[in-house]
Structure formats: C-alpha cells, structure tokens
Image (cartoon, rainbow, N blue to C red; front, side, top):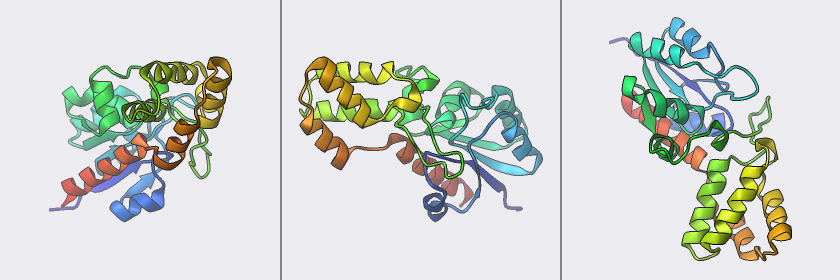
Length: 215
C-alpha cells in the first residue's frame, strides 16, 4: 500500500521543531484560501488543518475542505482555524480534535475572534494571546479560588473589548486593576507560573491523532 502524503498547516499554535518531534510531516505555513485545494492536487492523503489566516488574507473556504473529503483525503482540524472549520464540517467527514474544537461544536465559542492572534509572519511566534486561552486560564484561576466569578467575568470583558492584536495578559490586567480597582497579584503569579496554552495542547493532540492514523 502506497504511503499517504501528510500535509499539516501550522504556525503560531506550535513551533515546527516541536511538531516534527511528534510526527514528521510536510509542514506548511498557516493556510489561506486555495492552500488545501493545492495540497490535494499535489497528492496529499491526510491534511492537518491547525492554523490558518483569519483577517490578514482570505480564509480557507469550506468548499475546498469538502473537495478534499470528496477526493478521499482525511482532514483533521484542531486548535485554531482547524477547530472552527471542523466544528462546521464534521458532519461531512472532517475530524475535529481537542478542547477548542469541542467548545465550538458545543456552541460555547462562536466567533473567529476567540482563536485569532497576532504573530510574526516569518517565525510564526505569537505576539498576542488568543481569547480562548485567556478565557480558559481565568476559569482555572476561578476554580482554584484565586479570583471570584465576578472578577473573572470583569477581566474577560476587558479582554474582549480589546482588538485581538492588543490582547496581552499584562495589558489586560493593568486595565482591569485601574478600571475595576482590583489587586490581581495572585492572578499574575498564577498566569506566570501555571497558565496553560489550549491551542498548543490541541495542536499536539492533532499531530498525535495523525500519527495514529498513519501507523
């Protein structure tokens, strides 16, 4: 049996070196309109859609994912654009992986804005914090008794009020402390030492799932 070519669209969710340690695939930059169509034309048998462009260029169209599925290509989505598209197209055969996908699928997340972030166009290093990560870490802090539910909601409101490239924990907490007259020292310590990166975790899960498919 001929081995299927694996193409993975990856950027700020996980660095390529870490990705290659999990699974050695053809890693390409965040997907934009037409990239999945081209990958299928080039013989991809499995496509991992993790990162994609949102506002910088035309986003991946639903029809090109459907085209891939119709051509018998296995399409895995997770973490960012992949999670969003998988929540919309899993009924047609696209496979979603991870927590972010589940949040979109369950309707707890709706907007593209939840996973959007600013990143360096050359290194793909994240330069802002995605709202989905901020939301998750505030929930964890509330669960641990570091902040109250009311404070969690107020800080999240501050984060949502900022344009996605401006979302940064230091900026968000500075505004919250000033506008809400809060002492957030414990929260800052938690975020510095224990915060989690949902998008990264989901990207890793997706690569492990692709590795499983290819075994």
